[in-house]
Length: 122
Figure 1 (cartoon, rainbow, N blue to C red):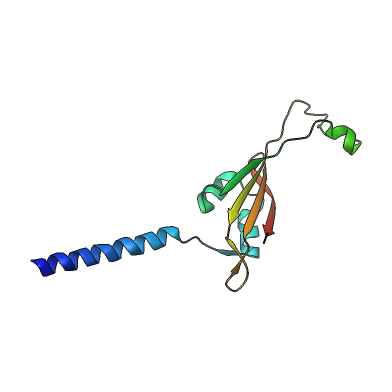
Figure 2 (figure 1 turned 90 degrees about the horizontal axis):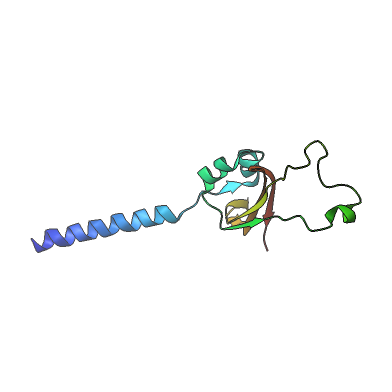
């Protein structure tokens, strides 16, 4: 009886360990794969494949931006429409050479669509 219980506990421990390592591993992409999978795609696709971002920021237009640029910053055809600009950050998802990953990936979303992708090592 003791031997069967010990064997069962070892088996359960091995299963739990293997499940925890599977849960922690993230899929990695090459630069080209990442760009082709996510460029121009909706936010829902990003969340489906990558999950929630490690860090999120919302862009805010500075007061007086129109005067600095020397041109109006609003669309005259839709003056009341505000664009929602977000930056999402993920860590260690994209390879730039074998076994070397970028430290950070930034996705810029405008109105819930990916419009810019940047890879950083800082």
